[in-house]
Length: 164
Image (cartoon, rainbow, N blue to C red; front, side):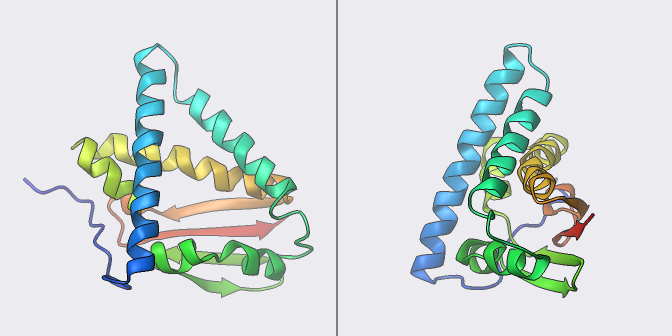
């Protein structure tokens, strides 16, 4: 029986650069999976991974996003080759106070689907990974709202950053 997750790339398929980065992201998905699994197998709750990824996000906010003075500068820095092409991402809303991003493909989910059929767990892994973005938001005095995810069966990942 097929699951509810639909995660087939629709854009840039066969583009050697995009395919190479998708494979690298997929590799990152493998190690996320095995690190989290090891922690859970040793009695830790998912909070250990959430805390680590939030810390990583705050680190990025203080480093990579340090010079972003407003949401529009943040949007420019956020929309990397990876977000735009690898994740088939686009900014669907950009105002002085909010940026909404939609992603049409997730190589991390591709990796997790190769390792487990447990779609509930895949959804949990995704939400944990989004804690990095939540950490970035916190470090930039923003809120991050996760509205939809491929990992939970939605057609796209949709999330927004809003200035506080």
